[in-house]
Length: 239
Image (cartoon, rainbow, N blue to C red):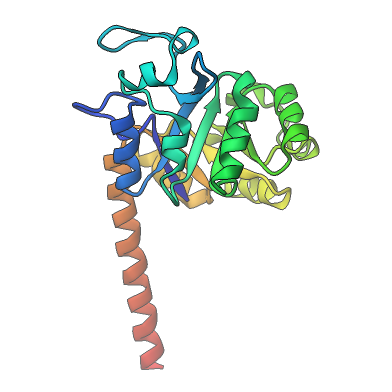
């Protein structure tokens, strides 16, 4: 299961979605979750809101990628260039899609990048334009409706992943998704109980702000697995 750092490993001195926060997440071995917008000069950049304040107003629509970098807004290319880092990216501006696809292909990153959108019609169109890209539909549990029909519709239009509240997923639901070639993702998972649930049902990925809890849970799972393996080995020797 891939654990994605929601807007990076943010904290003191590392604002959400800043270059420092995203780099810290990658350095610590987490996947990176962020949001894609477009700078004035057409460069894909990673920023959640269309306008924010960071030592002054930051507005991608009227600022170049170089100007945005002065406010710690990273380009997609700068994050993609870090090899092996899984990325889950919310496509906030559909008009930047072609530039994103070009970068992902150029850097041979199609296997580790997932693009997220909440509109099925948009996702269907994106799949037609770039069938090699991994696409995730993000939807609240309340809007999903009948589980089997929903998953079959995702597969029909070329969507390869689903992201909703982790509690919605059961082992049977994850298995049904996998049978259709669809990954199961959960967010936003910020407590130990839901982290444990996500691992137990076999989620492919989850998104969290609580990297401390995710690290503790991963260590606990490793210790448990090691103990189980040791017990199994001991039993085999006795036999």
